[in-house]
Image (cartoon, rainbow, N blue to C red; front, side):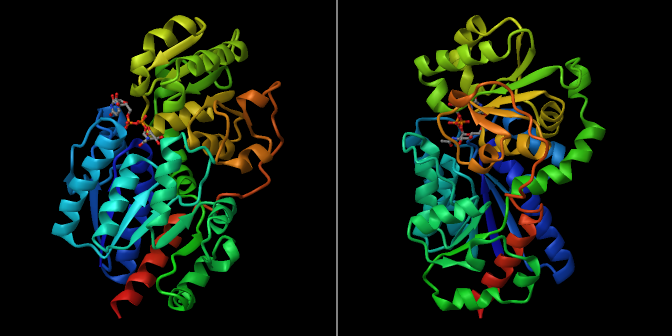
Length: 388
Ligand code: UD1
C-alpha cells in the first residue's frame, strides 16, 4: 500500500519524522505493508529551513523535490497543486498524508482529492477563528476535503463537531492503541463510507519532542556556542505574516518585547520572512536582543529548555514551552492551543501582567507521545478495508 507524504515547510519536516519512524516500525513487524513516498514541495528551501532537519534526524531524502519556492499565496499554492498532481498521477498512491496548515498542506490536499485519492489530515481541527490568517483558510479547506482527520486534542475534535462532522471515533477522547489494534475501528468506517472519520490521536509534535530531547542534550552545542546560561535569557521568535507584514503591529509587538525584556538577554533566531523588516527590528529592539540565524530542531529544543521565558507567535513553540514547563507569552491576538493558556503556562501578550510559573503541567492535553503509532494503525486498517 502506497502512502504519499507531502511536506514543504519547516514544521512539516518535524511532524513527518515520527510518522516515518512509525511506518518503518510497522513494516518491520508486519512485513513491508507500506511503501512510503516522500514529496517535498520546496516551499522552504534555505538550508536552515529545510535540509538541516533531514540531516539531524537522519531522515531519508524526499523521492520528489518540486522546488516551488516562495511567491504570493495564489502563485505558491497553485504551483504546489499543479506539481503535486503530476507526481500523484505518476505514483498513484492509496492515500495522501498532509500536515498542518501551510500552503503546501492545502495545495497537496486539493491535488489529491481532485484525483479521487483519499486525504488524511494530520493536525486537523485547529481553529483561530481569524480568517485573515492564511493558515486558518488552509486548515478549514484541507479538513473539508479529507477522509481521515487526525486531531491533536479534544478541542480540535470539538471544533470539527461544530463544523458539522459527525463520524467521531471514541466520542473525541484520545483513542487507545489497543482499541485500534482490535480492529474495532472497522465498524466506524463501515458505518458510513463517505463520512470523514475524526480521531483524537494526540499531537505528533509531542512524539518528536520526547524522542529528540535526549539526543538534543547529547548532540547540540548551541548553548555553549552562544555562551548562554540556564534561565539567564529569554527566547523570542516571530514569523507570522500578520505581524511581519503589518508595520503598526510589528512596532506594537517590538514595544511589548522591549518592555518585558529590560535587563534580560534575549535570543532571537530570525525567520527569513523577517528579512524584509530586519532594519526596523534591528533598530527598534533593545540592545539586549540578539538576532541570530534560524536554528535546527535539536538546537531549538535546547534553546527552549534552558530559557527562562519564551515569547513567540509560533503554534508549535507554545506547546513545546508547555511540555518543557517554560512560561510562554504568545505574541498574537488569539491562539489555537487554548489548553496551554487555561493551564496558566501561556498567556496572550495583550493579557500579560507579569510572569507566572505554575507548579506543574496537570493536563495531558495533547496525547502521550504515541500519536504516530495511532495514525499508522488507523491507516493500516483503513487501507486494508478499502482494498477488500
Ligand atoms: C509558512 C506557513 C506557516 C508556518 C511557517 C513555518 C503558509 C501560508 N505559512 O510561513 O503556517 O508556520 O511556514 O516556518 O504556508 N523564505 C526564505 N527561505 C526559505 C523560506 C522562506 O527566505 O527557505 C522567505 C521568503 O522571503 C518567503 C518568506 O520567507 O517569501 C515567507 O515564506 P513562506 O513559505 O511563504 O511562509 P512562512 O512565513 O515561512
